[in-house]
Image (cartoon, rainbow, N blue to C red):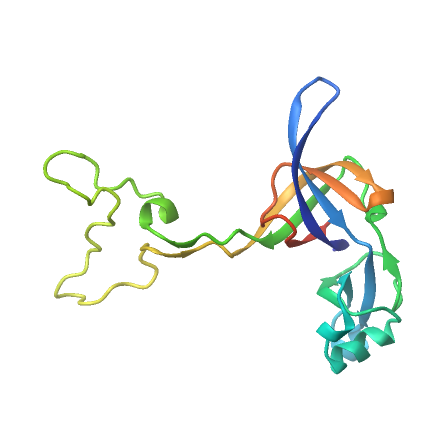
Length: 205
């Protein structure tokens, strides 16, 4: 699938032709440089590797410097492979937000916001113990019994319990492209996408 690497700028809203207020997300998409071309003969599959967002030379190592030098570009912070990319692209080619058109639908992948260690009410939507009276004291948000007894004498894998929440890879599909701003490399899509502000995302057609 064709796509680009981008950075989430934030959310805003636009009015459509009927005067309806539509929530949308602004993404800085590209420009991305082709840093490697995978072929069936050499690698066993066809794909292109894109690099996005320059970083200082001192923040890179010699191996990466050599890799990016082959493509004739500076070191990049984010590198992603796209399989089955449309079109014939060569090493060092630059791809911009003009890859997308207004009205088409895209899939956006990113890492969701990290929320730290959370209890079962927030993490899994448990209702709590319920009845606040009858001597509940401070156990309203407790998980309650987890069902284990002398048999099976263990907790089954996958039991919904408290733990780290967020920082998962999330893909939101079929987001409509509302606006493309080539001069500023901006892409405006309808709805929300995963991740915090300035986090990296991948946009696929």
